[in-house]
Length: 263
Image 1: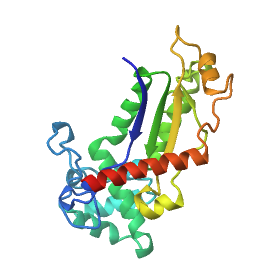
Image 2 (image 1 turned 180 degrees about the horizontal axis):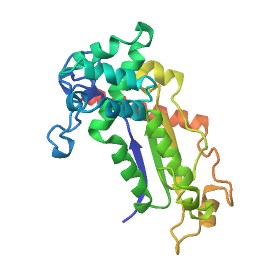
Image 3 (image 1 turned 90 degrees about the vertical axis):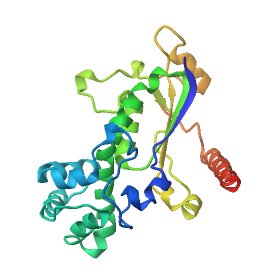
Image 4 (image 1 turned 120 degrees about the horizontal axis):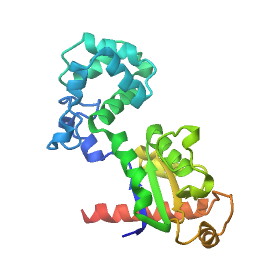
């Protein structure tokens, strides 16, 4: 059973982030938890366990890989030195001791992001979902994805351009003819200044979209290309212009406002 399209919003729930007892935010003190689903046995590991039980090397690797933190090893040593860490305040104090005031907020954001991603295996879940999208979207159908940081966007871009969210060795790379996706526009679209002004958390959002190519033995890629208005090796074109994106954004915001009013 195929669907005509899928919209994936990879953002984290603001309601969860704003709850101090969930341990996601560094702006308020709470238990060092960070589990999205605390009742799920698969999410049994907590941020406190990582900070209190993992080695310096393991913590540093996580901060670097999932937070792009260049000072990961220094921060990891400080975390281990200040054990036990039981609250978000404990973690904030450990990181703040070796971070300048100017860099403190960005450093805390990167470290908290990295721990949250590890606790919930966010990249593993995303890679699994992206790898299976071609199985459920019909030829000519759309996949639209909103990502919010470079780790997510990197995997989405990799999927649309190579057919897999993970880098593949050159020998295993797919030919253009066998790729399951054609990008609708080459560069990711970002929010307008007006949208950022009304919703600051949208500032890092990136939107990418692609169309599903033909399944072997069914509608040809050229037929799909004819329907979309392009053929051959041209793998992307701005089918969604700036005015159309603005209209879509305005319509989406209107739906959100109406929903909030009804709530």
